[in-house]
Image 1: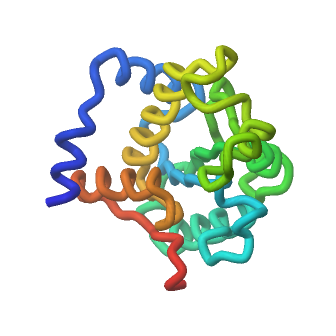
Image 2: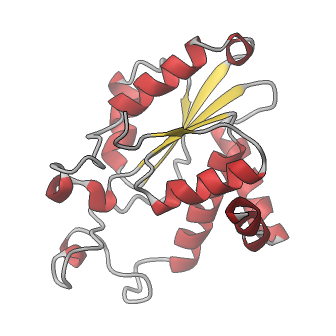
Amino acid sequence: WRSQLARYVFRPKPFVLEYTNERRAAMGWKAGQTVVGMHVRHGDKSWDVAHQASYFGGLGRYVEKAHGIVSSSPTLKEKPVKYFVSTDDASVLTQASQDSGLDGQIMWDDREARYNGTHVYSPPGVSDKRWPGFPGDDPNVDTFRYAMDSIKSILLLARADVFVGSATSCFSRLVYQLRAAGDMGSLSMGPEW
């Protein structure tokens, strides 16, 4: 029932869907591909929580799991495979383009702003040294675009053929709910592995 409620509440307006489809096309997401969506969350999962089970330390473990899923499924391997990376950490995209082992099979929205170092547990004065400001507090942050990009990423991850993300992320949990409402498979990056 939670998935159905999430799907009912999360009904984007036509202009949001148009933006999402425009960005999807710009990234090279085409019909006839197997798309593996990966949400690599750093933000408040970075150095100050590296000791917790919810921190995965970069793209490597996500790629490893994604490769495992694709290689174990004859159906997924029938079509060309592309990997969509959603992240708030620009260094993940640098890693993806240099040494991810994805050999040109990777895509992300290069127009999306990356606010690495967003720490929801940090007191004021700590977070704003690593981020341009809290939404609404900084004229340099386009909060409308920030919201549009977040919604776009959630929608695209929910539409991917396979999703790999952290169960400790509210963002990923919303993707899981939307995928469950659409009866699509997911893989939790929870501590139970």
